[in-house]
Every structure is written in structure tokens, then in C-alpha cells.
Length: 365
Length: 232
Image (cartoon, chains in turn red, blue):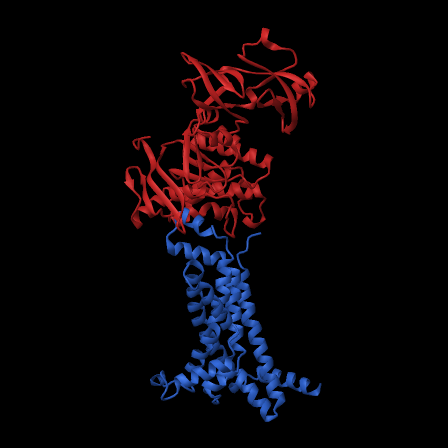
């Protein structure tokens, strides 16, 4: 990662609380007009990183650099804060009208009345809350409150917007509607955005880049498909929903076509590991196909195993099947396929997955 | 019953006839307690802000002391202020004992912890992240404080009312440091005590009713300020 072309970057960042290290990040950059999502378990330091990026929290060591200028002096911090804005999980609205809430950032900047009016009306419209302009902020629903909070942050027309789990307190339909609107506005304005989220689908959908955090460190940063399909270690693999993570040892490698032994079973995979190396084999559940007949003759999948269904769990539109095929394997099937195949617990089936569907990680990373 | 009726009648008479002595006493009550409240609001809310917005060792102890101060007995304050203002006392050079200034001084001491205690609670009751939100909107520290005060305006006005209520109704300190001197340091409460002692119950009643009316009017005014501009 280089710092050139970045709008904001951090270097050798360390944050401690009562002697305990909260953040330790050697380097992290955010490019102009980029949408970056920070994901990770609770307490991994996502929100703290956001506060540091927003200069609301001073690190014990390290630098925050905005367009080549270090944010250290009081003046620089103040100027930087006027270039960025932030939305928290709670709407944190002021006890006044929706209009005055959205106007507050502009009023703080001493902008003229007419311009405030024009901008507030524009952003109320953007977030579909024009009709609430004169309503008390205390009398809004959760979704309306968060829309007001977003409009307030966007009305400043900041260079960077920081979002700290802005939708996590909302019910799913409200969240989807708001995510749609936010995505539209972010795409239209091209504003640089950093969002902390728990919701992987939210991150996958909107981000140019996802950074996965664990115990104060950024463990992986890459495009959504890189992170989802090529996690760098077992933690990330687990976190991004690789339901099956198995330890195997490499038997042979012929120009990248590998044979791996997992619990005595031989599995084909693609990779660059040498014989006798220990690896984690990660398989996404949606890449595991279930058949009743032996599909050996008509499938392109290289790996076919006879399996028994141990357990069936509901996962929204999918069903999660836990299989035993000499090693544990998890597969997602649609409810339709489940009914068509007439599956039930204890059934014997065939599970297949392609060699290319196995993501290999060196053990001990 | 007769006593109460007579009192009411006397009060009506004194108010309607604009008795100059009663008017003077009422005005002094309002002036002394008003200025004392003003001073306590200034000190109480500023110190309240400092305590509520900062973290420091001994904060809990300090808040407990302030909260204890909310129940400070006026006679105790009166005693201490008298000793301090006594000719040979540490503040004797001010030469203000038995003057309205001394009464303002004592009442400000009574009201300040009340205003400060409620202010601290009011400001601490705001969401912890509110300050970060205000700063992230680009506010200076001063702008942040202004917005926080506006956000806590309801309980802060309650603090002002409680402070005023605490001093307009106290008698112990006023009588000790003011001396209840006719036409100079006599206020409604000290006059009521005196008239009751003399057996002039009708006048005492009249003064009490005027005091109640005064407290009501002032609080009504404060309430109007407190409740204005509440959006629907």
C-alpha cells in the first residue's frame, strides 16, 4: 500500500486504553472516492479506527495524514474536521426540528441563510424526508431519525464521510430502503466513504474495498471478492462465512494441480504448495453441490464424495446441510432444490465441489 | 379560619394600596435573590460543564460534595458568612456585614451547589457520543458548549428555578447576615418571621401570600422560557 493518491492515510498507528493495546496498524490508506468497509467481530477496533480517522481520538503513536498534511496541530485538526463528517449508530439528533438538525453543520460553519435553506432542502429531498422538515426530531421513527442524521452529515458536503454501523439498529425492511438510498447518493456524489458494519451483505454490496479487523489489527484488505474467496488466514475465512475449513496435507503438486489428503480422503485442488505442507482447505457452502445419483459421469466437478446428511438448519432462503463424507462438509441448497431432491436427515447423498472452489491457506498464518 | 380570612384581606389591601414599605420589602427580596441566583447560575453552570465534560481523579467525590451542598442548611451558611464577614474575620475588610450585599453573598453560596448539582446531572444525561457528534459536525469548543447547553435547556432551567426557589424562601442566612433592618435589609421572609413573633398574624399572612405570588410569577416566567420553541 502506498500513500500516494490517498485522501487520508494512517502510519504506525497505536491506540491504547489503560495500557492495553486497542489498535496497532502499521499502514492503512483510503483513496479518493473509494468506498471502504471495515468488518470484524465486536471489540476488534473498528469504531476506534473510525474515531482516529475522524481525528476525534488522539492515538498514542502514529500519524494521520490528509492530502499529504499531517493532522497534528489544533488548527490542522479543526480544519480537517470541517472537511469530514460522521454518522453514528444512534442518530444523536438535536432537540429541535428536522430542518434545524440538517442545517446545524452549516450553521456551525457560518454559512448564509439562503444557502443553508437551499442545501438543507436538497438533502432533505435526497433522503426522502422533505415532508418532515418542521417535525420535532423527537417524534421520528428509527428510520426517519437515521435519515435525518445522514442528511445532516451529507449537507456539509464533506470530502470524506465516516459511518459507524449506521443501520444496525434498524429493522430489515427499513435498513434495505435506507441502504438503497445511501448507495444511490454515494454513487452520485462520488464521496469518499468509510463504513463500519456488521452486515457482510451490506459491505459486499457497496464497497470497493473491505478491510477485515481482528484484535486491533487489519488482517486483510482487498476487494469484496478477494476477501470472500481468498481469505488470508483461518480467522478471515471463518469470519467471511467459509463454513468448511479443513486441515489437509499436500500429497503432490503437478504444475499447480494438487492432490491433498484430508482425513485420509484425497481431494483435488489448485495451488502452489509443496508436498508434505500442511494447509487449510476452505470451501464456501454455496459451492458444494448435492446430488442423489453418483454424478461422476456427468459433472465437471473434480471432487465427488459419498456423504450422509447429519443436520439441516434453516438459513433464510437457504437450508444449511451438515454432511459427513469422511470429513465434515457444509452445503447450502435452495429450499426448492431441497424439496425436489426429497432430502432428509440421515439420507445418503453425493457431495461435489470443483478443485477451483477450494481456497488454500498455509497453516500457521 | 378568621385569621386566614383576615390575612387574605390584609394581603389584598396591602397589594392594592401599594403600601410603600411592603413594596420596598418585596422589591428587595426579588433583587437580593435574583442577583444571588444570577451569580449561582453563572458559577454553577460553568463549573457544572467543567465537571460533566472532563474526566479527572476525584470526580465522584467532588460530585458527592456538590450534591451534599444541595441540602446546605441556610443557618449554617449564615453562621459561616457572618464569621467570615465579621470585622476581624478573613473578609472583614469588605465591610458588608448587615447589608444586602452580604445577603446576596450568603444566598449565592446556598444556590450555587443546587444549580451546579442539577446542571451536572443534566449534562451527564445527554448521550455520551453527543459531544463527538457535535465536534464531527465541525464545531469549535465554544460552539459545542452552546449546543450542549441548548440540548440540556429543560433540566438547566429547572436548575435555575430550584436555585431561585432555594434562596427566595430561605430566612436563616438572610436574618443572620442582613440583620432584618427596616427599609434596608428587610425581605419578605425575615419580615414574616418578625411579624409572626410580634403576633401580627394578619400582616405575616399578607407577606406570606405576597411571597408565594412572587415565587409563582417568577417560576411561571422561567417556565415560559423553558417551554418556548418546542417544535411539534
